[in-house]
Length: 285
Image (cartoon, rainbow, N blue to C red; front, side, top):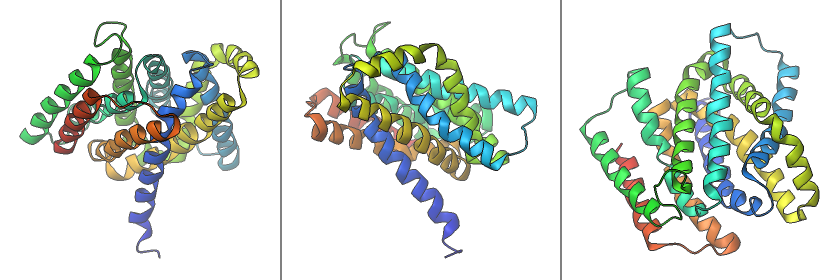
């Protein structure tokens, strides 16, 4: 069992990440029926932080050097809080399926950043894949309310993808040096503190929300936010930024299928066609 553990654990971490992050898209769409974007993000990270604080108190890891700690905090502010707020704002108008495909462009941004910051390789096939991916983005966005105009939902989702990619790339070396749980815990706490001004509003909204909405919010706080972040940090440290990003191509089609199964979200032809282009481009990259 020891011989398969090094390869099995990262694979299981990726599988868990893909599953809970796919469910997150329809869950966010449903939670936004009775909650606003910023309060929803705030309460998600407030719940996830309970797990992070418990782990830090239990393990009591050594403090990171100031520079690495600040980098980790930046990952939490941009890659966690920024991502969640922008995605929530985008999903007010963008369908869960379309949002999941647009978020998938984080793999492209990760590859760009990995080339610039981590000196990873980006060849001619990767550039070709990037062009195909952006063609898919345009096709999906054109069918969404607001299109790709400033302030449109699709623009918010794309901005969320960029924030996510920055956080993923910055945290890779941190995970290798300090471990996935340590890094993920600091990121979750940083995101929760950043979003804390909206927590009272979140509590008020949850008190008058339906039991179904509250259940989805709790799910978002525990699984995609806490479990997903921890599993992904572990996988990121094992596979590398550019390679790990490509595992996430399964999230989009799974999210679209789940949105249809859970609440019958209609699937646009533009979303399917654009999604195929996005995934094809990502696979090439």
